Length: 182
Figure 1 (cartoon, rainbow, N blue to C red):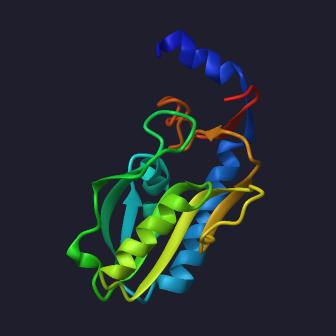
Figure 2: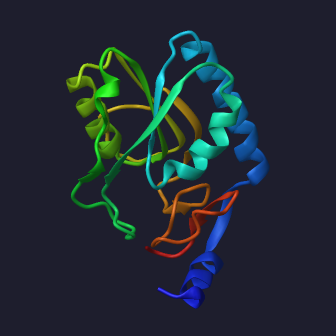
């Protein structure tokens, strides 16, 4: 892919959540997380690479003691369709006996988050919670629902705020959706 192709993807999309709404939702989500987990000294695990931007926006609003690390489990490999899961960085031993909050950019079908949950609980975590910027509204059932969610989005390919389209546009402060087929 090149610059022109990336610009064409942007041209064939529309903004569905403004940057202002993203920021407001993150502040609200942070308050909800603080109310539920603020006394637990949780371990926060960011799912790389999509959650990097969202995590960076969320963490400064979490004004309580916490520990931070990351995991990297991928299904998309710079495509618009999910495939086989590959652990690049698995959870560490630090999850044992901990309240763990996993932060991700989007919950689509829920398979990635469910695999992370299952691994963390199998490693002895006391509690598993999840926070996502977006949950995609799809017709099929999901293996879990997020505990904290900024937005529900339509069953379209969305990007921005850490979510990419073919490896591009993670850097956008708003959320956009493709207007043409993937």
